[in-house]
Image 1 (tube, rainbow, N blue to C red):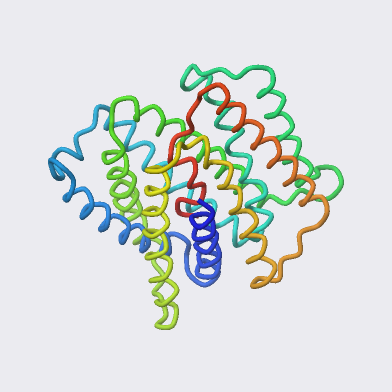
Image 2: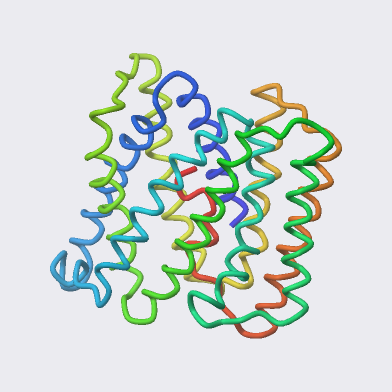
Length: 290
């Protein structure tokens, strides 16, 4: 899981690099074309083939979550460019708390007072990072907040479809729906990739598949509630990349706010484990395409 977190952090760094020169929709579309190709090949090799894998009890929900994911990725990559990796990820890390908060109205899984307090602490951590009133609010902070909210809803929809659809079906719709929706939009935003940057684009595509493959292997050996806390190592790796490669210098408020969010998120995950609530596998991949 730590290796998965490193690969996803690497993806975020490459995405930020490419999106600084090319339109974010171009970058994400190319990545999802490759992802969709691998998804189709994988699905065709499963028992029953594509016909069985593509059969869903909730096609509308599957299409909705696939579309929501691709838009979330666009928004989050924009946040990387405008705010930097560290600040954007520090705010985005609030998404597990939003999952817990929204599980009630969406799935009927209401939280107790302990997790409710943890959610409030995490949201306070976001305010510490944004520190409204102490400086001019940066409108770019809306991007990671919106991304975290969309990813939380996506994760809850993933949990909902998992009641009837198996993992193969959900994986199929994740890749194919995202690629199709992005293909419809990309002609309006296409920017040609320069020759030298095709190396980074190829690395982004291959690392995405490698990360998801390793994530699948993780869940063959361990329960989601056990390994989920290790996904927070992604923020550590992102911090190293942001400082070493992009010259980012997080201030004390950002570090304090991130600490509060991480502490609240870890407590919530441990509390869910104690209560026997399993997070969906896709929640562990917070940067499923970030």
